[in-house]
Image (cartoon, rainbow, N blue to C red; front, side, top):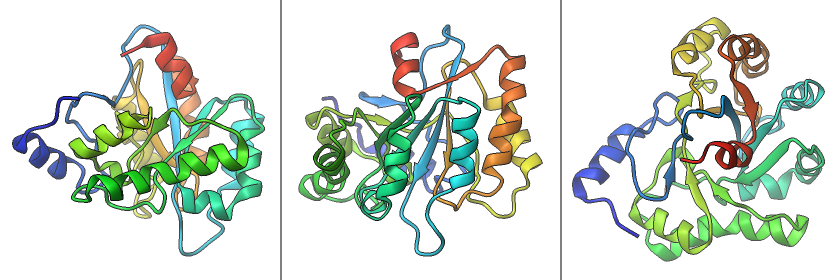
Amino acid sequence: MKALGAIGLVAVAATIASASLSIPTVEAPGLIRHARRGCHQVALTFDLCPVRRGSGFDSALVDELADDHIPATFFVSGSWMARHGDALRRLLAVPFFEVETHGQVHAHLTGLDATAQRREIEGPVALLHARYNRESTFFRPPYGEFDPTTLEVAHTLGLRVVTWSAVSGDPDPHLSEADILRSLAPRLRDGGIVIFHANGRGWHTREVVHDLGQTLAERNLHPATLAEMMHACGE
C-alpha cells in the first residue's frame, strides 16, 4: 500500500487536531471520506466511544432511529462493547442498522508502532466476531487520526478506514441545535458521511437527526447504511 509522505502526515495531524470540530480533508489510499455522487444517499454514522460518566448509550436517539426506520451505521469501541452487551444486541437486532468498529480503548493511533495499532484496531473486531458472530468491514480511527501504519494494519485485517465528510460537532455543549443544523446544511451532499455520537455525549443529536430529515428530503437525499451507500455509489 502506498504510504503518505512526511508532508502528508503533517497535514493529517493539523486537520484532525480536534475531531469533534473539524473534517479530515487529506486523501490517502484506502481511506473513505465519502462515496461518489449519483446514488442520492447519505450515511448517518454514530460513534459509540467509551465514557467515564453517564450511561454511555443514547437510548432515546436509538429508539427514534428505529421507530422512524432511519438506516444508521454505528462505530463501536471494544471497551464500550464489553460494557454494553444489551445495548449492542439491541443495535444488532435492527435490520437497517450497521455495526462497525472504532478501536479498542479509543486510543490515539498516530505514533504507535504496528503491533500497538493492530492491538487497538483488532480488539473490537475479534470481540464482535467471537461474542456476536458478526464481521466488521469498516474501521473509524479514534479522533479521526491515522497514519500510514493505520492504513496498512487495517488493510491487513481486511478493514476499510472511514472518516467523514460532514461533522455535526454534537459533543460541543456550546452548540445549539440551530447551530449544528446551520453548520451541517452546506456540507450535506450526495454520497456524504455525517458523524454524530450515540454514547450520550452528543448534545441535541436526537433533535438534529429528526429535523435533518426534512433537509435531506428537500435535496432528494436518503439515509443509508455505509455499506449500502458504498455498494450503490462506490468511491
